[in-house]
Length: 349
Length: 186
Image (cartoon, rainbow over all chains, first blue to last red; front, side, top):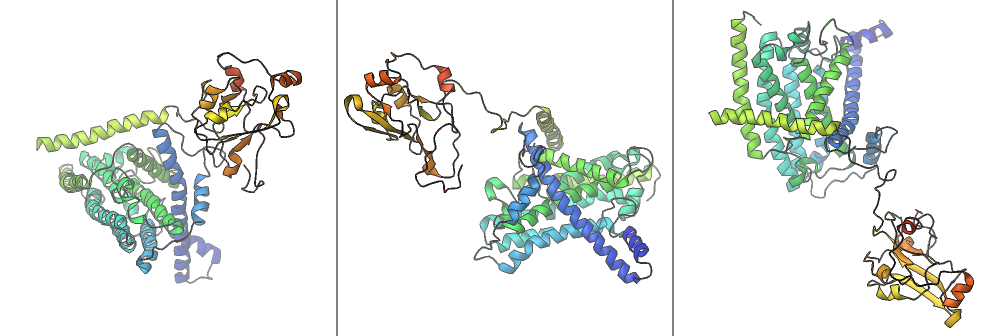
């Protein structure tokens, strides 16, 4: 945001008051983030279909656009915009209409604290990491709203599962990040990234064995958090049709998709910033920080897609077993272990 | 406790094992054929759409009689030497690809082609005409000889695969559109 306010200050000189600068900068950043989200949805729907295709010895989309169906997402968008916006007769109309946007807003707000490059962060909050976890859990409310308001048993089942899953997996997700906070001594996303400068061996996931396990825990929990395979219980298309968005059509359905892929990228961005050195390159001085950051995050997204198309879906009880009996204890051990490691090696936060 | 740890170990390693397998598939060449551009090589006896070679057909009506779904329409006029067939049509809406007509045909005029994709906007266009009504096909042996049509009965000779391969494709067949070309055209 500093970048944007400086830019506006240079363009308008003294023509804008500090408040005006803040508003203009904030709106521009929000617009950029919304565009990043839309781009995520466009690129990742295509990427997902290609990854799925090649994993199954197929090609995926090939016909729209000249090369490997690159314009397929555009065609999908045009199609989805032309669809009728249906509200079921017995649906709870206000909630039904509101739910997609609640999910979308929850995702959009979390983007504010992602540090893409030095200074390029919408809101450089001191509680950045905490803010991201707090805001991204608002999506749970959207899921519950969508499931409840649809007045459909599949939607309701999907929503109940989704809420249970999201609430459960937020705990290992957050716990896995605590060792990093202990080492950095800050919840500020910029500080966390800057603490990792100086090559790959300074990145947090290689800091000590406990942090490596914490990174794996974060990765698994983040897949569950964004409701993707093998943890896609809320959407299980083989049993619940499409889960909480069964009844949605057209643009509203597109918003669910937008939020899903934006969330996918969001958790990868957080993992990049917290564990994989953010914009820091593998070695050497910082160059093209934004690009380095995005490449790392996209590679994580591809890894998640790879996992999704490899593993079968878990049962609900297995899902809860993995969370409460495996991941939460392991995350607590990681917190303890990282603390002991810090004491033993004489580091202080 | 050991079982618990073993389960965790197995979950991680089996996930990695699965990812190795799917990773191999990524680098493998896909098996998909890009259908309209690439096609499977079909066997010579592929049971495609029924076609009739009117140069061989002498209008004996055996195919129409044996057809269990009555999808072959033959119309003739005249008697004896002046008997002409002015319509031979197959209604692919009804055809069940049983192949009885090809088995019954004494001259091997009625055959399965290698054609199988006939996506059309209007089902009325699935009735294919094989005889130009302006050029009726003679049915009597002598008249066929005079006009240079095939006469001899082929005695149980197997169908020539090349001839089937050369069967008229959709673009070659005259299109029938009883209700005009509304339906959007194909």
